[in-house]
Image (cartoon, rainbow, N blue to C red):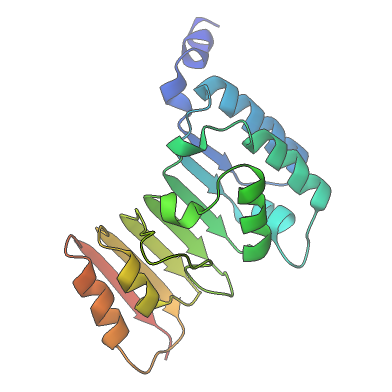
Length: 193
């Protein structure tokens, strides 16, 4: 009981909120507990496949579940969220949700993004040229990347991992992205045949 109270009183232990499983009411309860224990300071937000599909997916969309989770996420200090993992979401629903919780332009504000199976590609939204990305690490799996646009919007990438990307004909856009990010230490690019 002593160690439990010690753990509950240390917000730094609750820095990653991992919402991985449905049903959404359990995810909302977990979010509520984590946000309270962390005092709203959660730099890492992870959505798992099961929950992301249930509340942001196109096929099994659950508006009531989405609202339950959204109501809890509104309590986060969004300025402190630096890392996000998102699998298989409907990008329009997710952007709408981020606006609802007060975290517009989430792609540009993250330092680390890990995205997979999003049909429209990355970035999902495009903004004014002067609004650059803060990204230091980008992981994309099974989704297209708009290399030409991204090369004009980034400059601080240290790590980029792109897997199962649709085949491209012109690698000049990829080269421009690599040239624009002189701090790169890790590069993984795997294109489909």
